[in-house]
Length: 85
Image (cartoon, rainbow, N blue to C red):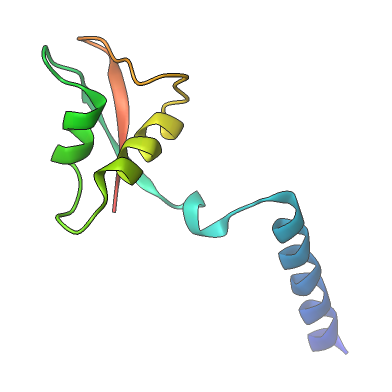
């Protein structure tokens, strides 16, 4: 009985997460914080911190979302988060 109850509640949790858009895979994503230097762009940082098989455009979008940016502008001295794999 106890086992069936646990399985039921886990199923409900998974279904709820699915329909509310919770993504368990991304909740444990790690990042580093860097200070933007003169001449840095989001593209150059995405390129620098990407694995060689990554699509830099995807890394660029990840950086933008992680930092809650509306555009792709960064400023010297700004601290931004860079996702690491």
